[in-house]
Length: 149
Image 1 (cartoon, rainbow, N blue to C red):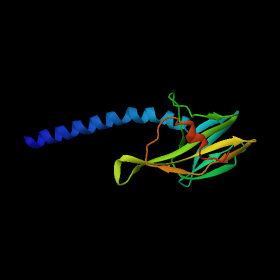
Image 2 (cartoon, rainbow, N blue to C red):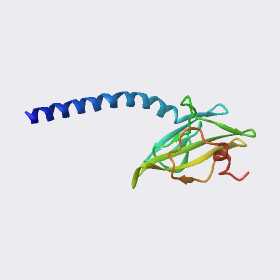
Image 3 (cartoon, rainbow, N blue to C red):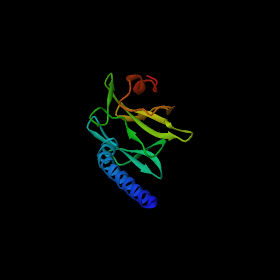
Image 4 (cartoon, helix red, strand yellow):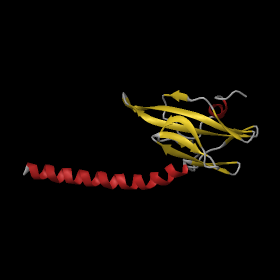
């Protein structure tokens, strides 16, 4: 009799886990796609996976390697759209890769770099690394502090 209860419990547990997982997948898919596309001065930029490395596809279809692992995304605002920060008249975006810390799953390891469009050219900053899970748009110094102005 105890075995029957264990099997019933395990069956209920598995069905509830799969029920919980399905809506999360449906919700995450659109936001991930939105976080990999941004428009700067009318030019559409897209993040892509190139052999497990993050690259930026430019409007002319050339790619800019970002020297970061895949998956990566742009920082997003409260509506889930990729955020463009403007400093002076220079538009800047941040591309971030975040992964769980293998030594402590409650923490993250992140790396990010800003990309600015200056004099009509895209210019990536140095790569910054940290121990946070970085969510949201970040502060303006995250966008500007990685460049020499």
